[in-house]
Length: 298
Image 1 (cartoon, rainbow, N blue to C red):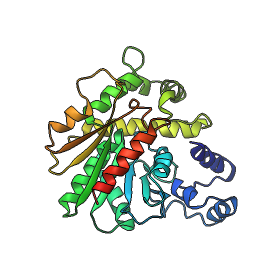
Image 2: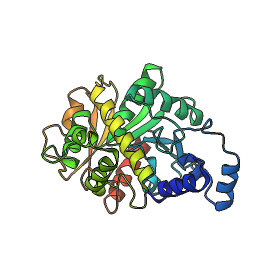
Image 3: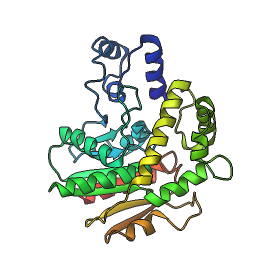
Image 4: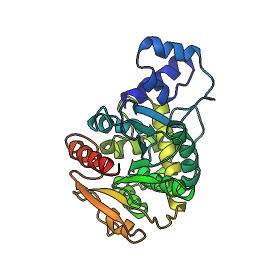
């Protein structure tokens, strides 16, 4: 979250955008300054955010949630250990170097191109939390359609119908739902969204209005892409990590939703609810079980 705020301040002071991946690759003031001097106007932008590049295990590629930010996986990447390469996938538009993509299918195609730059062929380990889990599902479908093997598809408390239940809980319709919020003036949209999603940490406290508005815009675009998405059946194994605590009251829990269209869903219950499962203290058990699933897929 602080990294996103730093990027926003860099834009304010220098009028130049740096990709999040560049920040992770250049972790000193000197290297950041060099990157600014070599600014290419976003032509070298990639959705890949290298959170952990060392290790002998097969890489794990984890897709961003609806807010577009893959840095939420930084702690998870560290808990999986130094031998597990871990790449986040960041949404175009999160750092102002690209315009957002508007469909799940288009995002999946672009992310596959980026994934293949690191790992040209399978078997692949793909995953994602919340909205990212649905995107990971489509990526896995497309890889298998291209003749590649997906060793592990890890869905972290995600589902298409479940996502709408989460949305109604975070932005309940009895107050201002997401579509009501979208009709407000831009400044009011961001203020409402920022207040109501504080528990999810979608917008860092230190973020300025420009960054907050950018995250909100991505959230809206991704919500619309979910409305249009219809997942096809998947004929291989899914490792589903479902939060033990109910965050929403709905019959569309992730396990029930995926088992309606997929025959091989392996359920792993993890502590916390939809929002807290990837934060301390719950993330440690998630990392242990996810690590075991990745190892088993080898």
